[in-house]
Length: 562
Image (cartoon, rainbow, N blue to C red):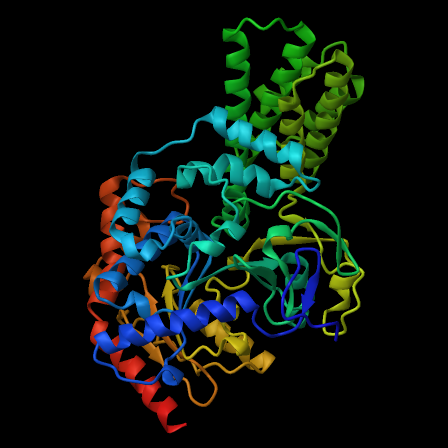
């Protein structure tokens, strides 16, 4: 095993399973808060018997963000929030966490913080200009520009109604009285290489790294270039907007993603062209044609995605290429010939065509002396969309000697990170590190169609990896869905309280209606819809406060016996 360090320099990598010094200190302080909270709820125990309780939020886009906010708010109202030691999220739940933890000691003023978040989501907006400028900033500052940058700047900023440029390391002084925050993603390559390669990756204000392997780097420099455990080149620390995009990059399927991204690029191009025309900026005909080619290219891809006839856009592209750029023009003619009688194009051929046109336009802009970087990052964005490249980051473990780290990671100069929901939609493995000694997990599952899929899958994975986890038996299909399930842990396994967001108790026979109304693909909600959803999530705690206290009391009694 590589050298273990008890404290971490931003230019070093730490190999080891111990908690960071900052996390240990925080837990020591938080334990006193939890002890006091338990006493206020009629539960007596010593400080050594205080249970470590983790609250986990699932994925599900804005639905998950708002539901977690409602659940946390209700925990506060019931006097239970101070029982929570850890708060961890995946995908949309991390958007809620980002909004909470940017506020100093947010739980002490939660009603105000909640109302500010609701007002922003209901009434806020981010202009196309601001989104375009943010995308340009990502493009100019980073070595590794990917679709995560495009998605964060153009889509996530619209959904959360802000561009949050705070850094996760800035939260170090913000959570002194709060549960310890853990954001989660997965290593895409490890996902494909198997569980033994440890795909689970956690980001805290202090350290970021592989949860089960025990390989960490200071969060302020995750993304910088490392070799043999030493930082050799700085990269800007990722901001919270990018982190939300990274954590939430799988809120929909590939088709939905592509449609959103191409629509965003279409509006950005149109807006830019409109601004140029209004300002009477002189442009040659060739430059104007180049802009129209980009717009037509995006429209062409949108047509194919929507299974619409792209003939008109192919003809437009041929006209724009008339008497010039023979290679691209010939490819357009070739693409026309491949179109079926139903107006469909082979996706692989369209992908090659799109990349070829991007290359041609890049050369054109250079020849024409276009100096506006805007068009080059639009081109780069289209290229990344076609290649489907997400979350590429310098690997801080590159060329390092560490026997417990999978060799496939050690030999890789870069890694690709993405939404953990693609593997498991609740971040169980972030809190299953044995050194965190979790006694109780409260999981809010916003996956409305299969509300037990994640907890059942977690149990299966834990069995394969020899990690203690309770036996999970999901209710038989057709059984009326309840609002509170307890999977009791014995020995070293934690107990899991599992809460399906929509259930027979809070929806009263209208579960399907609520699921349809708050589906994952929605990009915004009205104030009344936000309020209703928070109430639905909160009532799951309100109705089960005594049951939850009973579970906590039983865990403490078991600790006393031990």
